[in-house]
Length: 221
Image (tube, rainbow, N blue to C red; front, side, top):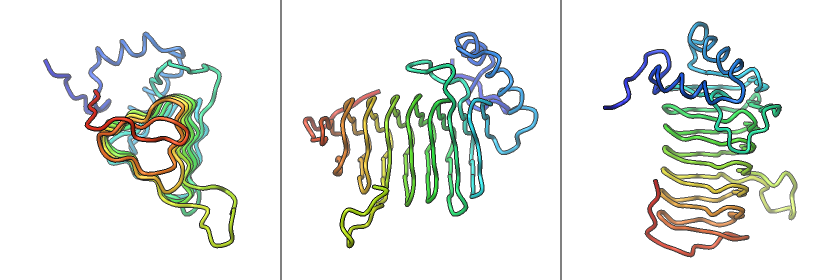
């Protein structure tokens, strides 16, 4: 039988929510986050008190964003705090329902967009100087880096920043770095500890440092 939609809690049925809370490493924080989100937060942002949040730019949530709420316990240090910082000219757009784990660090000076049913596991850092786009149904593992900027100019004519585009239904393995100017196609898989410096076509498996395509027509779920 399909999960019932809850007007206040989005994709969670009460039974599923209680199960998630029972498995949490910080039940008190998750209970407070849930209550605060349901009772007071009209922007559909469920934010843990363990996440440092500052927004002087633009946050638009067309659905719901769980920020450090019901975090996957894989590789989570219960004491670790997360960050979401949207700077003056930055914009963060959420389409549908997205989850960012508690100990993630997210800095938005340009544009960041995350699609429906995408989740980002603990310890991952995202820095969007120009543009980072993450599609729907993406699984981003723990301790990854998605950074669209070099932070320094190597040559005077070289731009330090270039957009990153991650398609729909992409799986990025743990400890992977995705660097500036990269496009990852729909359905692609990036193996753990890879460094992605060039485009990865749709439905391909890429691994290595730098990442290279080793299989085509892959499927995952």
